Picture 1 (cartoon, rainbow, N blue to C red):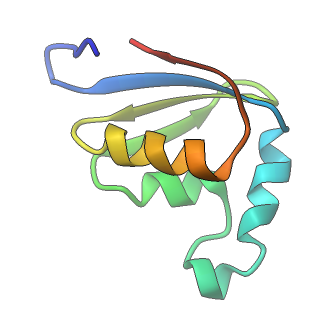
Picture 2 (picture 1 turned 60 degrees about the horizontal axis):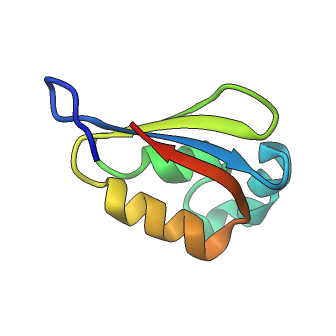
Length: 84
């Protein structure tokens, strides 16, 4: 996995379902503590989720990428995932 000068890792993810559908996983915000996939991923320290399309997002993280990727693989259907 490549890192840039600030040691951030980047993951470009294409989900099988639209991100708005994935957001429905978090309908019980009281239980999850968040209301969307973006909020869930942004909750990891030094990690940011940027939606770039209906099914696509760019995720950057300084040191939590392994945990984020593991959670995504276990809990979502991913069509494509590229680490840069």
